[in-house]
Structure formats: C-alpha cells, structure tokens
Image (cartoon, rainbow over all chains, first blue to last red; front, side, top):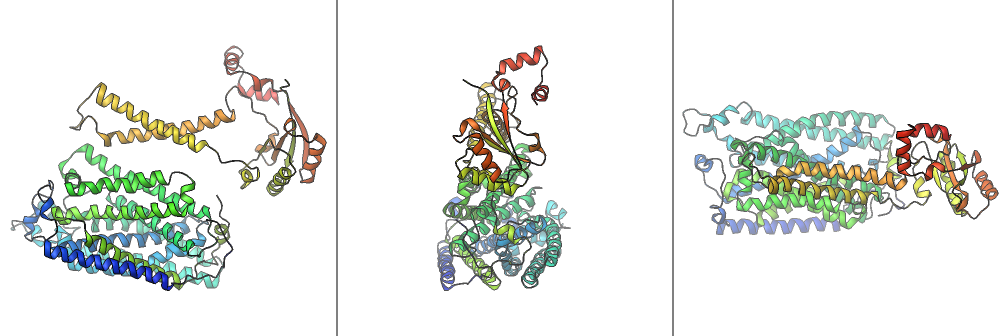
Length: 432
Length: 205
C-alpha cells in the first residue's frame, strides 16, 4: 500500500454500492434471525442435548427463580451481547481518538475522522442498552428479583442482599444513564471542536480538544470499569473478580482497534485516504498485535489466580464454562483466535502492512471478541440452555449492518481529512 | 598482509548535508565504510542502502529456544523428576507454567538479541573500537571511507567529499594492533597488567 497524490478536501461518498453491501448483510442477518427464532419456537432447539452435561450453575437458581427457559430469554440475552459488544467498538473509537490528543500523537492526525465516526453509533447503542435493560432485566440479571432481599421470603439470599446498596434498580439505572450520557456528551463535544477546527484553523481548537480528551479519559477510566461490573459481572451475582473491569476494557479495546484498522483498509482500497502509506497500517496493526497480547495477559491474570487459589466462590465462574461440554469449546476457540492467531500472524513486520493479512486477522479478532462477550454473558444467564445457532449469527449481522450504516453515514457528513489539524503534515509524511 | 587501515574522514555539521552527501557519494561509486552520528538521522540507513537487519529473526529463535527450555525444565522438574501435589493440581498444571515460560522467553529473546548484535558488530571487551572523531558524540556527523575498499584515489575521494559540503576532510590511519588481539590475550592482560579498556582507549587516542 503506497501513498499516492491526494485531495485534501476529499469527502467520503456513501455510495450505492456500499449501501447495497450493508443492506445485503442486513437481509441475510434478518433471514437467519427469523429462521433461528422459528427453529427455537418449533423445535425447542437442542436444549435437552447438553442439559445433563452441565456441571456448574449457581446452586439451582433456575428453580429459585421460578421461571422456565423460553426462546425469548435467548433473544434478550443475544440483544444484550450485541449491545455491549457494538457499544464497545463505538466507545473505543472515541477513546482512541481522545488518546491521540492527550498524547499529542501526530501520525494519526490524517486518519482521525475514522475513529471519530465510530462514536456516532453511541446514541443508538445507548437507546438499545436502556430499552433492552428495561424490557429484559429479569432475564439477564438474577439480582433484579426483589424476593432475594426479603428476609421472610424463601428466596432470601444473604450474599446478594449484602450487595443491595450497589445492585439496586434506581442506582443501577442512574449509573447507566450517567455513563452513557457522559460518553455521548464527550463525543459530541469532541466532534464539535473537530468540525470547527476544519473551518477556523489555528491551534485553539486543538488545545480545547486536548482538554476535553483528557477529561474524557479520566471519566472513561472509571466508567468503563464500573460499567463492566454492572453490565456483565453482575450477571453472575455471587461471583466477583477485581480484574473484570480491565478484562472487559481489554476486550473492547482490541476489538475496537481491529475495527478501526479494518475500516481504514476498506477505505484505502475504495480509493480514499490516498496519503496513507504502509507506516500508518504498521502503526495501527502494531496496536492490534500489542493489545491482543494485553487481553491475553488480563485473561490469564484473572484465570491463574482463581485456578491457583481454588476458592469455590471464585472458581464457579470457570467451572460453569470449562466443565460444560457446550461452553468449553468456546474458551479454547477464544484463546486461539484472540491470542495465538494474531500473535503469530502479526508478529513479522511485513504482515502488519499487507491488506489481505490485515483483513483476515482483524476480522478474526472481531469475531473472536464477539465470542468473548458471548462467553461472559451466556453461561450466567441461560445456564445449560445456552446455544449457538442462526439466531446468534443473524442478530450479530443485523447489529453489524446497523453499526456500519451509522458509521459510514457519519463519515460522509464531514471532510475525510482534518485539513487544519496542526500536526497533519507529520501524518502525511509519516514514515517509520 | 598489511593489517593497517587507512581511512578518509569527512565531517558534516548539518544532517541534510550529510543525507544528500551520502546519496551523491554513493552515486559516484564511492563505498562508505560507516557513518557516525550523535543522534538518529531519519532516512540515513535508507540512503546508505542498508538491508533490513536480521536481528529480529535471531530474537525470535532465541525466544523460541527460551519457550522450549522453560517447558522442558518445568516438565522435567515438576512432572518427571520430582512430582509433587501442589494445591490439589495435576502434576502437569499448564496454567501454572505460563508465567515462567513467558519470563524465560522474554529473557532469552532480549539477551540473545543483544549478544547477537554485540558479537556480529564486534563490540566485545577485547576489541578496541575505532574512534574516527570524538565529535561524533557531540555535534558532528562523521563519515568514514575505507581507502583500501575503493578504486578511486585518495585525492579524487577528497575532492568528492569537498563537493558535497564536508566541513573538514582528513586522513586517519589505524595501526590496528589492538584490533587483532585475541580475547585470551585480553583476559591475561587484564589480570597481569590491570590494563582496562578505558585506559587502552585513552592511550590509543
């Protein structure tokens, strides 16, 4: 991929071809989704098949819960998985953008509109998060059952009652609204400054953006961690891990970087961002490589301590996943796709610069981290009734189409190159 | 065989002069022995026509060696030689082996790469480095041209260097006694005479 002569005022045109591709993904996703639902409603799926093989579980919570598994549960859980995953991709776009400003990075000045456009999915993701939570909170979160906190009730759970100060509906909803609202507010503040810079020029907007970006990073440091406890860790209510915030952040971050890298490759191949050379791709893919190792480090850090200490209340999380015939395959698939594959494929210098290898590895990393979230959320919610089929694939494709549409649309709204960025020249002549 | 070396040294004050100078000189068919700069000059290795270093490959091989050694060591100790039950885990507790494997991989990769580099470039304790001009550590770029390696005469190269704006051009001869000395001789010297590397360099200059 060589740098060519380019137009500084170029704009991304959301062409009919691109729309058609996204529409095709959407239609295939919808068809698979409907087939998946029909299969679940009529055949009941393969629920019984692995019900016996399941060894873990939180001491018969299903019976305490007093409701039985139905296909709507699986639907709601899948909505939650995709919500969290695509919200992550979107917020990591903003986070990456903010980091570039806080660190005074010059190399990325020319490509900054791409991660910036990722943030445009945030409002939609936020609405979906709130909607799915309000509709399906009993399915996803065991702790929303009010009888757990009632001493006279047979369902009374001392451990969960002890967590009531944190895990109660009003406070949970306040946190959710504050985090999502904060992220959206920071995104729009950054976007506004960025667009004003295109018109005004000068360094005033740059310094303003640096301040906003720094404040956002501080806010994100806390909110990403707490949101990981809220949205994912509280599914396994009895269980906790002090590394979980980092773990979710690492998963989001590497998936977000892979998505940015993939978007850049597609844009470059479609004839946009012609100034980009191999060095830009090398740099962004170095980060994909590095952060896939970071994710593995956190994964092992969490696993090793639990494995070594062998305390039942901690091991339950991995017992549920590793002892189950159904979920254990995904754990090993996860480790292979998210660590060994990018580690070996991206190790050499040249592979980080070739479009074909970048596409294969980044798509693999994105799929792998979708399964990472699948593994975090499904075993705790659906227990032995979890499955993977057309419903999962279809819904993920629908979300992908929506995400791609919103991002491409936002990308076409602003010039593709931030022509008044004070460090643009450094990016245009980037060479390592 | 003559072991003495004769060099022509060009001093450059400006990095752009140096970069263009290197390109022009190479175009005229002069082979450059080495360029010493006080700071990394971007694009210089490209201008000098250097091939990509193979040290990353050495690093990978050493790292892989480290992984293998770590696994062999741990399996040998913990599974074959003296199996112990620790915390109710199986003898072959793979997750527990990961940190040690990681550390040995990193250790061997980094030391292996560094030592490979030092060995290949001849930066060993008994070697006395050829110091062409001490200002290369301060504010001047120093270009060395090996006269024996070039077909052009000394005068011709001298005028080419002047053409590309070298601030100074002079001849530097190394008798190179020290460079031929063996490692064993160095160690014997060190213990009998207490001759250290720094005192030899000082003497040399």
